[in-house]
Image (cartoon, rainbow, N blue to C red):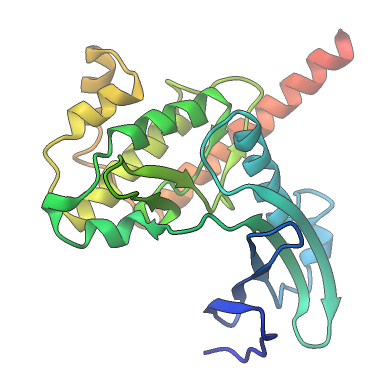
Length: 251
């Protein structure tokens, strides 16, 4: 485990050479989750001339979802800096969602007690209608709350690979990638026989559901395929931004 010295009111969640995650109290109650990407590369400041900070990107994506009412980790702030202990680093602070567990952990338990996942795919549709592509829409990146006697609730986290668009993206490749990523991610953990109902809950027609599920058999999550898809989505985001700026300038 990477060296870590916590204050008395901090709780360490993850310690790796390049990433630290911990919680700490908020002044207004509750707790914050602080994610630090540290020991960034020497050329990292130069890259900021062309692309935003990783935490800035994630913060803005979460803010878009939060404003649209999509269940997610509430973004509080982001920052960057340099010090002797962590080198060049970035910080993202979100409000902790209490009493949750990663969807992956719940699915690894008793399959009979797994939550109904149709609402998760309905949330994916709301995310895409808000113009956000997650980019890593996998079971570990969904937090689940299971209140006693009530249906499970799902929360979207970890959008470091996400993209923002100026309009809804439902029916486009970036949205399809997210749905297929989640289906394949779930399938890696447990057998699934409800995929058609889940995709229907996403809001596609029967023809659209058949089209999407037809892509699933040969769909791969491994590198380099996921990197090709992310590059394609990044290119679409850049084109969308350029088109939007040109429209604004001419208007």
